[in-house]
Amino acid sequence: MSAAGEREQDAREAEVRNGAGAPAAQAERRAVATFRSIYTSRDGRLAVFEDERGHLTSVRTARFA
Image 1 (cartoon, rainbow, N blue to C red):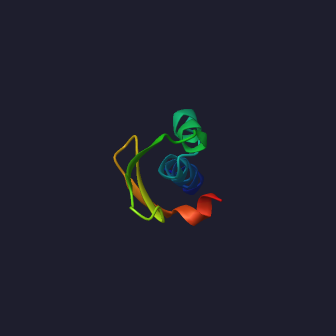
Image 2 (tube, rainbow, N blue to C red; image 1 turned 45 degrees about the vertical axis):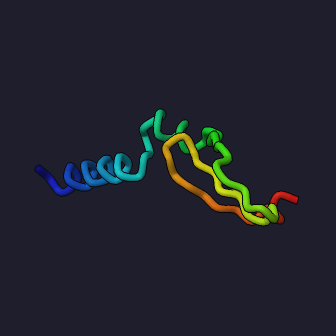
């Protein structure tokens, strides 16, 4: 394979790794996530949410204001 062909293949592989050129991956990154509240502290200062993939996120509720 020529040097130009290798560079072109490397560029295509980089696009695949970075998600470029994959419309489904790009749309997924732009999509709005769905979260479900699974815990709120008694004093209401902390909340824990779970997304549709099962990832947990804790948030200080003062940030919602």
